[in-house]
Length: 220
Image (cartoon, rainbow, N blue to C red; front, top):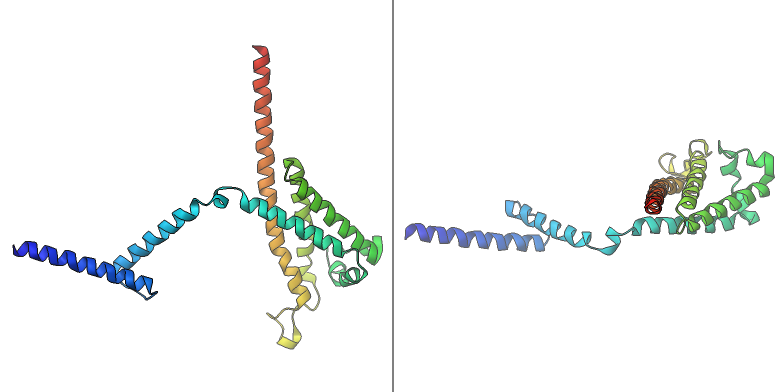
């Protein structure tokens, strides 16, 4: 009888302790009990299981969203190149770009801006067509990568990158920070290029298999 009472007491104490742990977790208070770690892990596993079932997680939502975003960026920034104020605002960027400095001697200030705007519209159009054609998607992604390699390489050579009124490094000037966003756009372009190549290659393999099957069917 004493053993049974002792067992029941331990069971009741365990339940009370478990409820206490749940209350602490619900209140956001720190809990040292091992039960808290198990409860947190259980809650996290449940949340991850729910999130994993979401449609946009299992589909290609991130891929299509990245493509659509890059298309918008190319068309918006391409439009700006046709205005005189933008052409002159680009002077410190183009003149210090190791891959694009030649645009000024060849086209002049306005011509260089027109060239870049046309290229951005072209790459944006290729990315847009890439929704329907996997091979064209590869060319659009390559153009996007080339665009942002050209702009990212300006970063080490950009003049007056650090804000002197704020004490210099790490306080940066606005034009320099404007360039830094291209690092993210380059990463997005590489992401698109990787998936576009894989999709195009998979499409080619599928097309070859279909041709082989048709040939075998005709031989029969």
